[in-house]
Length: 209
Image (tube, rainbow, N blue to C red; front, side, top):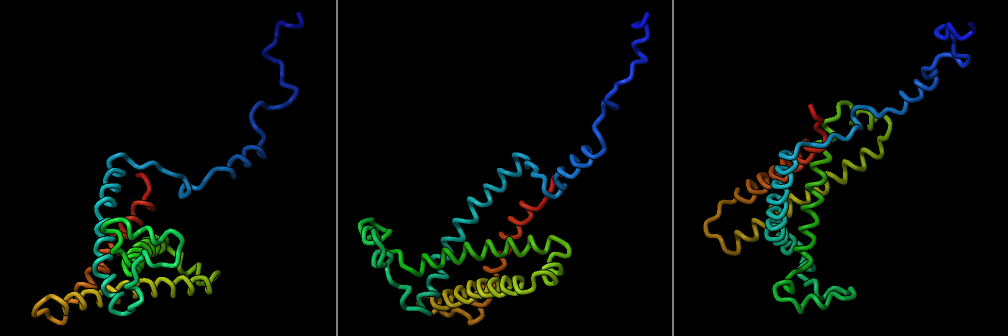
């Protein structure tokens, strides 16, 4: 009978597997291993949030106290209260007790601390990629130089303001303060912010084993 040997029937459309072109196109759509987002363990994420919850407010408070004092000693205009800024609604700040004492120096010092922490994180992320600086120097030299100048300017400004802030606070109230104290504390402060940036960089760039 004509239907006894159905096993010998061949598919007229060829092999049922995908053509090589389709398989190759699917391979091209796969993301590189470095671009795959890996969800970190809960314990590591909780640790990351805890470090930020402690380090960031502490850094903002220190900057608002010390770096702001350095700004006031260098630029008298930064002593202007925020309530006197020529901005719509700024005068309402004076109605809130405690907040009315905020001035430009505190605002600028807080923004500078945030920029410094972000820059340190980017610096360590760049150093973690082998050949990244060399490739940028060959392909985007002007962009690399611009970023480097901005980074050095911001980081140096944070160090200088912290130094003058410690010197101003020491001269105003501390007794028998050695002259090297502002320099040492400034170095320690910059190192602490750099460690915070390195921690953020490691958390973002590390991959799951």
